[in-house]
Length: 432
Image (cartoon, rainbow, N blue to C red; front, side):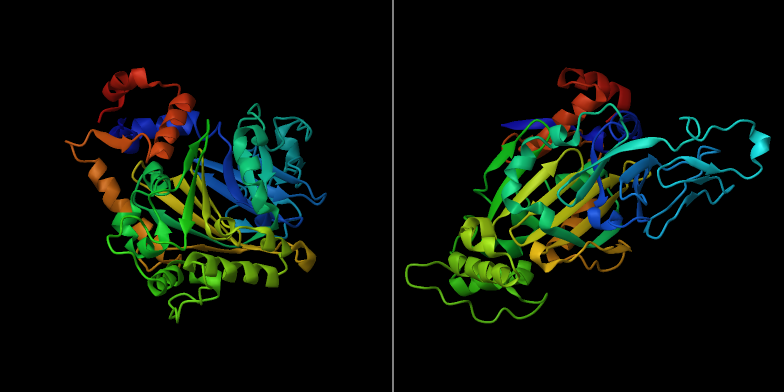
């Protein structure tokens, strides 16, 4: 069954304003990794449209978050990500705060009369902060449900993967010429694999992956190491191996763009999928993850993709964790794609968390984010242009294959206070 979604939700300035008013200040959203704010004095800024949240690790080891605005005249206090802060000093007039947000120093203080550093009028405005595995989430709504309740089923469903063992190694941000929903929709279905990721077809089942939809979030499990049912001619083991290496060779010890070489030997009665899984298993055990020996081929090879409302895709593998986040930009036709890469570190290795590499990339240059993400990124602007055509008033999506996109809009309607029965009214209000 096909469902329709009004196109103006992706193009209208008024609809974007409604999101900025009712969604982003009220929803839990991924801010950064624990590695960004692991040590006292580490800080990280999250920008979502006009909103700015400052996360900082205090001298007492406590992670806190604040609205990034000086209580004097609102200047942003910190930008980007960094370390070594002993205080928070406004660069405009040098009002200074302790790392717990209390006002410490005001130049020419007598000119302001009595300023009580303990009151809510002078301390930095707090933001809720909590963690799931190595991920840090924030919510500007102090009365919001706990993060554990917001994530709900996702926490238990992903428990087997021991997410706490993952350390963030790199984070890249790149401006995208599309709406944030256009961007995250591209990571909410596999229907497009046949179109823009044809390199995946010899090594990925893009048809039979089971999907689940919970209240807020959704999940896909996608099998790797076997060919797509879409292919008329079944590829041989060598072709499956070559495609696997091309798409995700790092998982079997191959560098990007390296020659695949001969396929691994398949034992009698075995499959190329099982042989690839055994390579991943052995690499994990050699890295100190003895529990990999208890994982089946599916757990070792397959991807669990969690779509967390509103703007996050979490790609969980036994040996890898990748995250893609969509953030709104300055107009409905602008967004940011943030890609986070993680490596699993065995607890016995005794490796502490440290600042990952953070880079901002230009959309006009070749992006060092891998074959598949580059293909996704190249499609965003094209998709957004089509949404503006006067004859295109509705997206027509599959209620089953694209159920995670449908769920995004169901939740949007809930947060924005609109319902499907009000679509006609909204169309008149915001235009198509």
